[in-house]
Image (cartoon, rainbow, N blue to C red; front, side, top):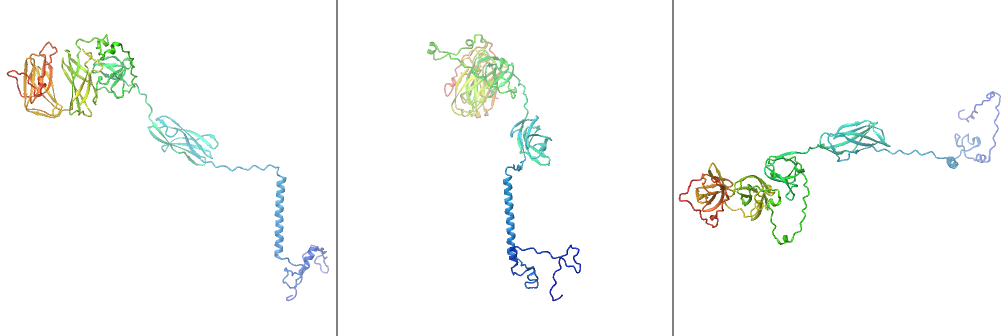
Length: 561
């Protein structure tokens, strides 16, 4: 009814079959007795908030009151706390009761594998031989299986392998092959590939390929001997003599010294000969250097009483030194007779005289000591008549411009049998090179006519007063040369001079402005018996203004050519 009290709510439906029958009253449920706590709260006069109004018609419905929201929250919090504490106590109880049970093993955390490739062999900088297989050993660390290895030589893949050897956990090894076709430096790199396609590259290393050694056969060089030379047991005069080589002998050269002054030959198990005794056209480039044997140790002989009294030890002649050696009656005798500086001290001219009555033609060795000659020893071919001379020039570097001394030795090995071996070494005092022309004479006889070559090794010569005097005992011929001009380093030949009919040797003297400048001698071919000529005193050299030799009443004169 609108405006009236609302009817009481309908009771809930019931399963009783008699429920809802008109005229039948349903049984009422028995009331439950209230406990003191509930009765105390029900007696409160707090309005029931569940009614439609605080003072409405449902005030005091069921005789109960609504609890406050704060007290309800406290009850919930207390309940939850009790449940948490109870759960903790139960967990602790289980831990105590189950403490003897073994805990399940903890699963270890896997350590990540760092992938790495490394070349174990060859080592960096190793030398390998060209055109020979070289094994390249590589090791790879990877968490995955390796399915392929590749070898790169200077960026080019040269070998690969599709399987490797497991050497340890997560470690694999492989052996690849490399070949180098040319000499040079090469970079080696190894790549490894996993099953998932990951690429692992090693750090590069560099190797050096060297040419394959070639077995060099023993070098045999055939050379011809051009002069008489001694064989020695070692490369030097301190070694013992072991024979002699003659011009025209053919030898096989097997070694040489570092200074190229001595050559080793096959004879005698490796005897030595001077380099200058071999023909200059012999190619010794491929002849190997040979270490010389140790020099012999001389055993000193205790001096006798007589030796102590003598201050000078005589030099034995060849016949005394070797009883089996016999000096030929036709042997020559070489003596260094002069040494002068020419070309402003840049050249040393050595004059050799054959003082024997026997002529000589062949090769001889000449050596100089005391000056910087290059070379200091020469082999020269000479042709010397009795009392004839030969000149040998040595280049001096640096030039000698002050007074100096030089020692000249002819045939230092005594390879040529001479009538005397005691006069082969002479010491000379070299004067500073003179200013002006340096003249020398070279006489020669051709077809019965005498020719004189005037050689100038100094400054240029130009004069209107030059005379050539040709003399033999009892006869003198003078030829005037006007003008005479000889440039520096050149020569002029005066020919057409009649050869004297007498006299064993012909003496030629050059006078310039009345001064004796140069003298030379030559054997007279018109004399059948040749003997040693007596020394003719050179009166022109004894004074500053020489006395000219006696001339015949009508000397033969002609202009120089």
